[in-house]
Image (tube, rainbow, N blue to C red):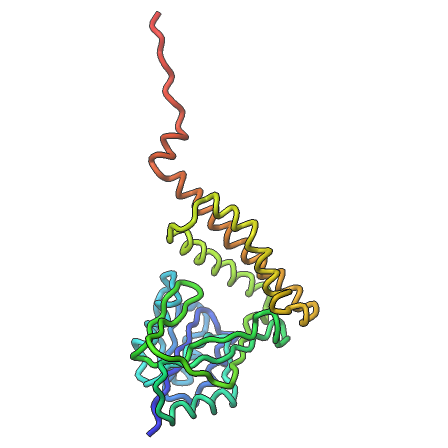
Length: 273
């Protein structure tokens, strides 16, 4: 007997993209949407196709949202995707094979095929693996922004891709990464691993490293101008992230009693006449 599949989708103000995503997974046994209190028609669109919507104000952790979705899911397996993902017929067929065949794996990884401004980006690191088909009762997610499943077992592989459409609108793409970099900076500063001096060093080093990795090491140059543009864009994202770290660490340093005492003027000595 085939096992059941739940699809968990994270949303917030996704009325322009969610219908395409939902249509691609209507074959699943269950769709659970964790919505971050959308102010547009996202929830109505989801409920219209029979999805179960869990409305939950975002608290700074995408892992928390993923885990909340799994807590409300009832399937044996959970496919974790985003509102800008589209599941292909080939991917559906690969998943149905997993559901119909006993497996000792706790997760399956598959490739996410990123399409940036209309172009499938085969090179540059944008055609990457995600272990996001997971057993509901065997996996928990950790991490605030780039969340990942904690796996206590083996991972299989699906020979099929899902489509990822993160950048149909460049302005929205920039806004989203502004939000992500703020969350990442807060997480890095809270970890206590980096001093302000180290953060300034990383701010100078990491953007160049990111550009080299995307454009040269992972051959983003083979994507032509798209490869150059997005390699530069994500180098800029890295600069913004570490700049925010530096800003936050400076604000935290200034708020300590020791720093406040050091910055306050010393009292003037009153001389007796």
